[in-house]
Amino acid sequence: MLDALVPETVFAFLLLFARIGAALMLLPGFGELYVAPRIRLLLALAITLVLMPVLSGGLPGLPGDPASLLLLLGGEIAVGVFLGVLAQIILSALHTAGMIVAFQSGFANALAFDPNTNQQGSLAGLFLGTTALLLLFVAGGHHLMLRAVADSYGLFVPGDPLPVGDFSMAVTDVVARSFALALQIAAPFIVVGLLFYLGLGLLARLMPQVQVFFIAMPLQILLGLFLLALTVSALMMWFMTRFRDLFGAFLATG
Image (cartoon, rainbow, N blue to C red; front, side, top):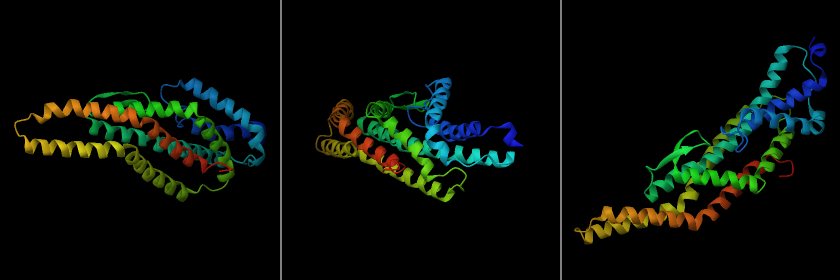
């Protein structure tokens, strides 16, 4: 019945589009809220059309009933969402690190609208997140993400049962790595902030008449901005390395 309604070519295109479209809906830079949905849709269709001659040979045949077809499409969408969620989790390390930096630098209350998350965020987190997205596209990180989506067909073969247990373990591992990465990025600010507050405490004890609060705030902000300017290149390189390691695991040659 379905053979008469859905040609084999249309089925192959639809099956590829399910995974690729779901991934592009969440991948950094492609699935951001400020990107027009029509642009995302056209991009997903174009990428599917380009990859179809390469990947169509490993696709299963058209199922004989609608229930099996929906189950197959649902599995492909789940794999695409899984890849996009991993990217968003590792990217959220920058927002966590930015909030830590903001607390240590004295401008935690200075919030701004973050177009990447569509909510209020710290200035440091907004700066780090925007810089990371820029570097991802400048350094070819978008090619890495697209290659990972294409090579994922060798790891998660369409039609095979979904490794739900492996998915949950991978998400848990990436969440833990994301928090560790946030602490690593914010480590210079945590160390300097600890030393700064220790010095202020000693100053307050040795000279109680000094208004420590009025001295501390300008110095804390100035020191935080100086440290951010001094370390931002190293922080971004460290993040790019961790991001490359994450998606490199999905590459056929990685």
